Amino acid sequence: MPSRRTLLAATAGVTAALAVGNSAYSLGSDDEALRSLVSRMTLPEKVGQLFVVRFYGHSATAPDQADIDANLREIGVRTAAELVAKYRVGGVIYFTWTHNTRDPRQIAELSNGIQRASLDQPRGLPVLIATDQEHGAVCRIGRPAALFPGAMAIGAGGSTADARTLGRISGAELRAMGVRQDYSPDADVNVNPANPIIGVRSFGADPHAVGALVAAEAQGYREAGVAATAKHFPGHGDTAVDSHTGFPVITHSRELWEKLDAVPFRAAIRASIDSIMTAHIQFPALDGSGDPATLSHPVVTGILRGELGYDGVVVTDSLGMAGVRTKYGDDRVPVLALKAGVDQLLDPPDLDVAWHAVLKAVQDGELTESRLDESILRVLRLKSRLGLLDRPFVDTKDVRRVVGTAGHLAAADRVAERTTTLLVNEDDVLPLSPRTHGTVLVVGADPASPSGTTGPPTGVLAAALTELGFTARALSTGTDPSAETIDSAVAAAGGSDAVVVGTYNVTAGGGQRKLVEQLVGTGRPVVVVAVRNPYDVAQLPMVKACLASYSWTDVELRAAARVIAGRVVPRGSLPVPVQRADDPARVLYPIGHGLTYRTRASDRS
Image (tube, rainbow, N blue to C red; front, side, top):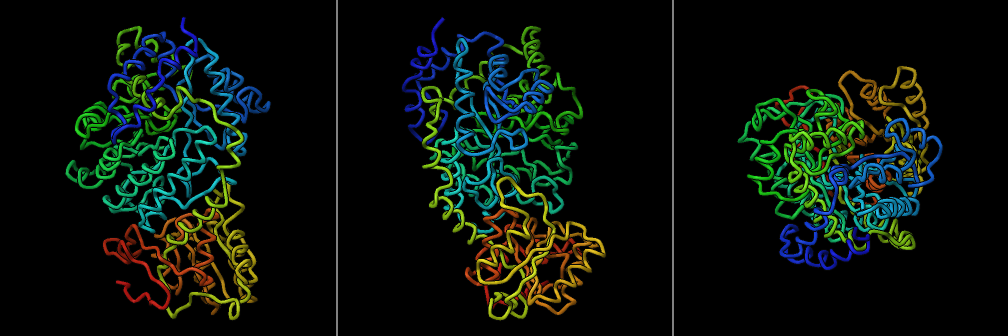
């Protein structure tokens, strides 16, 4: 039996070979070294290599007791080290809610512990560690890491250079912590304002603009030595159902799919994207069987592999989501996904059931061992290109030198300043001045904060405005304020020179709209900051000043505060159209709308 040192030595030079040329998949003779690794694996080891799994705990060997209990309950092992040893998994995924991401140095030590646990096994191979670090509304690793604006904000900035900077800096920080695969960027074209799961996670509604930004961000990650992931194929941008909780159906024709949804994925493939994630959606024009795309051979093998020519790693979205579990049981889903053509099985709800189901499918002849070998080889190619096969560990001393540096934080702030979008500025309400609007009341919805933010949006905005010379105080009013809450906010506004309102998914008859109406009625200048979807402005025709920040993270809210104070001129423009609330067939503000100071919002249609 060859030692770990012998196995790793057998792949020497492969990483360098993979870095040559524009394509990540032109391997030449060095591919034989990877095939040799696959040939030495037992069938159970091969099955394990297909899975990317979650676990609880901040340490690979010594998690807190509550996390040990959760691991035993959900996975049947105590620790991540035991998980790797028992199932020989090829990848793991970090989440905040599984307590994997306390701080950067801890994450680096956790990553090293996982690699050590895997490499200590016979024929052990390094683990591909992944996370969802999209920035904006979805982040798993928070402060002190550099956090950038999310995708729709980047779309509002419209700069491929900024998208590439995001990928390069975020990738460098992830790599320093031992994370080599990021499930970002989102390649969905968000054309449905009611989309409950994509929305601001998308760069926008113009497929070519989305494609350019997807490719640029992926290039940045590639330069940093981290695998980017375009998601969610074949396109999740026109759904009104969340695939976490339901089974969405996309009604686009094949022709519309080619013109809309496919464009960013084609751009990602041209940019040699390292991995593509499938969507748990039904797309009848692409496959009439009623199967989710994740389990569809016509979609994954026929279109993605065949028509689009993609031979990189295909990873499923989480197999615990309702969209992939509606039609088949948890024992069938991983088998059908592999038959469809995917390579990595992400986060099954019951790993033991899924692992044994794949093993049995091979033993019974439903799946061939050679089919598994195809996927394992693709994953090994990726691990090799990333340097994992000969450099699996990270130096924890690099964490402080790389993660959250002053230069990285300043870059994130500069990018954010180019994304804030001024939608309305009647009567030149903005900018506010501390000389004439010294006291500012900040009220708002205060949704749950993304990972790493310093507090609720109202508090962050108030603190940022105070630093800019105002005397600002925060009052949380919730996403559906009651009459009593609205009365309290109106009373507080009476003692202020101006009011800033953070809105979050305003509805026609909801409390947030009533709050804004009554605050406008006080006669005080009212500035609305839509802290998630820019579509809020359509529900608020009474406001004279409205900004879109596209998320409620610190970096975006601080940028919005600088725009409010006139320290930064707004430069963002809408990457999605905003329809009229009273007539959704008509556009209120088109793609590209964005004001600067002393420009009136006279283009309401």
